[in-house]
Image 1 (tube, helix red, strand yellow):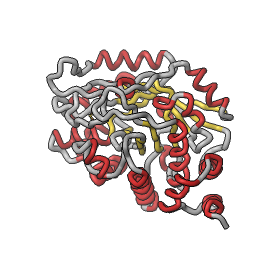
Image 2: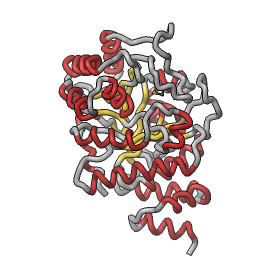
Image 3: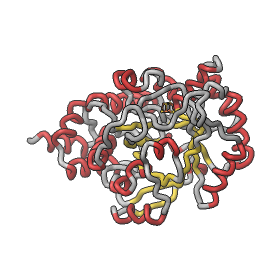
Image 4: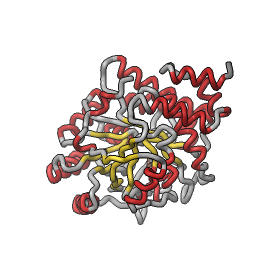
Length: 364
Ligand code: SF4
């Protein structure tokens, strides 16, 4: 029997593919093969013609960061003339604007700002929870920002998490993962923590009773081996959590690097490459319920991602970090939903605020 048929049979029988098979698929499988296998894994969790979405805004409350990742177009060092820290009224106005157009999810993304201690975050997030209650939900920080602030304030990660939780935080996101391979991190973001430190922080977040997600960014100069390192690390982590009867990662989102206005530069990868990778994520990460496609960096092509195994996407209203690197935001919600319809999917709004603990459903 041919190798492709062997792997297809395994996937259809709910067996796992290993790293060598993933590598083989990447080099040899046709898009139709990948769509078929990704669809089969997707169908274990979701109706084949249905997808969910949400309307989201990233709130960039500061651009001051000392991590100096070479692929970043957003950060300014302390004392830079165009560095900023926004005040609460500004943050509230951003929240109100999105509520006005029907959105209810916010992601807070700043950087490693040495001036902002844990009190700043508990005050900001506590004020938001007090003002908006359960009407909205927010991803308070990324994994790496959380670790930075905890260390800055000489707190253990569980201590920092307890303070954030008390202030009303329910979600952290897996941001700051990019590629979970230390070789990649040493080349591009040596101050952004090792893979072991990143995963340990994910463990602390879940153990504290908060929700978190998995993320990945492709299209820098990472090798296939480094991409596979990432997928292996995430799958093993989810196994560890679920097999111990604990909460795991709610979802996995992959987006693409934008190469403008930063030190690393380079060229964007094609949407065709992104879609093949998305399918490989769906096939490999068989223990994560939600695979999310990135409208922010792929626009219309992201909705084709629903055929390549994704089941969920957000329509972004704003994200300075990726916009400064070249992302173009599509704010016409009907048009984006039309792309999903054209790809053959019915869509339904997913209210994160009303379904905060769906992560436990991620068991195969
Ligand atoms: S990617 Fe994030 S951590 Fe890295 S320099 Fe930019 S803002 Fe800082």
